Amino acid sequence: MRITCLKKSDQGGASIVSRAGWFVLYLLSAVVMSSAVAEAHEVSKINRAKGMVLVTSSAEVRKGERACILTPAGKQVTCGTIGRVRKTDFVLDIEDKQRMRRIKRGFPVEVKDGKGTTGDERESKKGRKTDGAARTASQPTKSSSKTVIRVQYLPALIGPTTYNKVTYVPPANANNAAGRALWEADSKISSAFLGFGGSVSVPIGSGGLAVNPGFRYRIYTGGGLDSDYDPVNKLRYAQITQKMTAIGLWLDVTALKIAGLGLDAGLDFEMSTLDMTSLVIDEATNAEADLTSATSKLNVISLRVGAQYDLLIFGPAGLNLGTTAMLPLTGLGKNFSANVDGDRFAATNPDTAADLEAAMGHNKSGFAVEFSLGLAFGF
Image 1: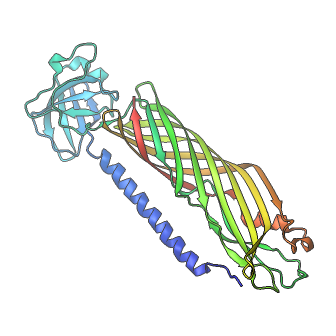
Image 2 (image 1 turned 45 degrees about the vertical axis):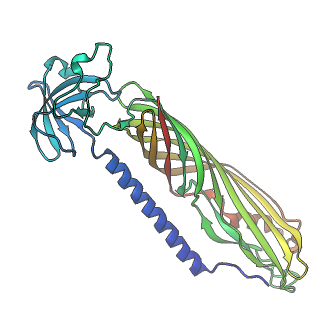
Image 3 (image 1 turned 180 degrees about the horizontal axis):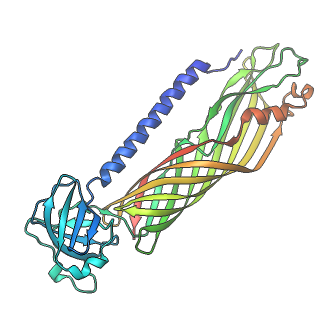
């Protein structure tokens, strides 16, 4: 005799622990991303008439030090001397007032060492990078206008597509006279730890805009409940296996990218396939026989919004960290097929296939959240 292997209360506790773990991961991701960009020096206000620039900063600077303003691509625009210093910002007096018109809000600022070494005098007009010793948050390099290729681990707290674990409900008697549904939903599966993919961020101009095509492959596992099968012979039970795979394609547009942190929005297209197989197993003889098999396919279109942070630590190579929220809009191309010929009780219930489809609950989710962690390569 077999009974369902998980109680509802156990599943509820496991679900709470699982979601708490995901929430902690989300908080850690947010802390790492925010701390990674917290040290950046950036232009916040420009006073062209006075030849001064207000720079936001959380790193320690000293009055009289030299600092240079760079484009997002890392090319030096002009330099100046630090004047008034406050807790969260400082004033930079620009030396070459003619270059003020080239400065824009959000440009990174590089603070030089105490000796004022900048290498500015040795920089040719062809745009060679300065070779002075730098003390700044722009080290390591934070990709702003480079093409970045990402190889990512992509777990999902909640995926765009969900399904239910199903359990077999044996009939009340050997003739299934009640004609009730033989399949019921047990619990919802929406999270996936197995997910991998990649994306490319291609800059458009020098204003921080970029397009980001990407793909992913994700595996959802869950649905191995065993239950009674034969109302007479309690040694015969149903063994159920379920697995869903999903391929996702997306296209995001980066509206703003500062010091390697990009804010993205776009569209997501996910193609998922849910497979279910079940066997009847006799514990007395260890004999196995096919019971029911089913396949469900569904495509989901979603809106995406998120943030990606690329930190190029080792020259052109580094780390990627990000999070994306999705709003599934619609499910397309739903297709379901089932083979119930192995279930002798299904003959008296013509709605068995429809009951199984409803129990599997293969549908779009109401909301989705995924994370990314991987390698980034800038060129």
